[in-house]
Image (cartoon, rainbow, N blue to C red; front, side):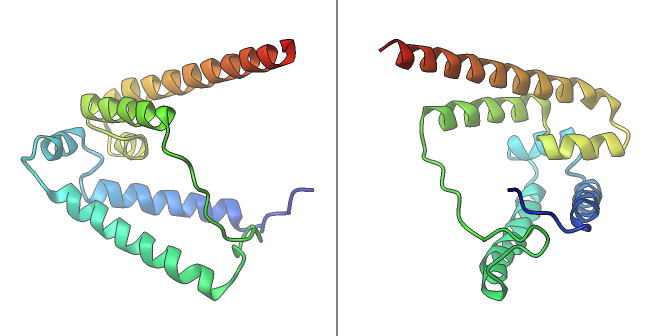
Length: 153
């Protein structure tokens, strides 16, 4: 039986997204040209933005489980979800990196980029949705084929 979420769960997710988007817009990381300058080693501002986020996240991940053994809004136990490094992780990371390099923007910043008036980013967002759909379609058909092969044995 799924646990009931706290009534503030979705509003806090929304507020967190707004803060994240505002931070990306304020730091100019929602502008593809800034990201492309970083990728071309011409502007290292993104290192400081990502470094600041890594420090805050690291502290939160280290301190929060010591304060409580359960997440405050969902009630779920804290735990690590380990994913093995395999071919799919390598290929997916490569595709993500190529897409980031070509568009100059990652998925989170693409939405923030819409908020600062970059309507042409809709092409990159459309590509992300198509890619995610195709990956899900491929994976589900591959799983069906694997189950059929196992069932035939």
